Length: 77
Image 1: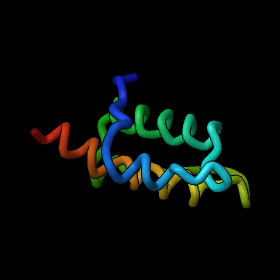
Image 2 (image 1 turned 180 degrees about the vertical axis):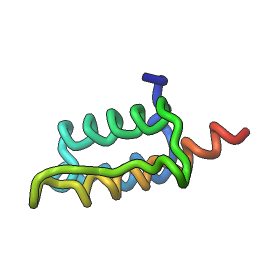
Image 3 (image 1 turned 30 degrees about the horizontal axis):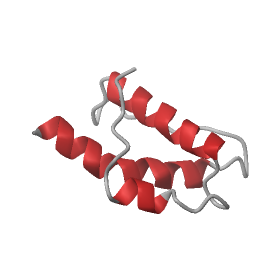
Image 4 (image 1 turned 90 degrees about the vertical axis):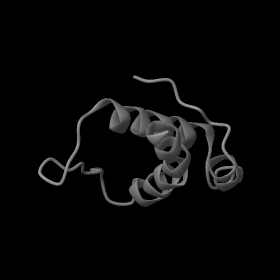
């Protein structure tokens, strides 16, 4: 898995509330982003976020989206 840069301005601000985003949530976000960066995706081969009902998929997805702008910027540079 690629190393992740967590020092952007949006991701730390977004996940700073420890009531909403605990350490296990942050670890899950980082693991998900790492996996997304390590696989080839396209419109033909998209990615799905699967999980049980009320398991936190939306919360983790929002954290991934909060992380992505910095990651994409660093990748596209």
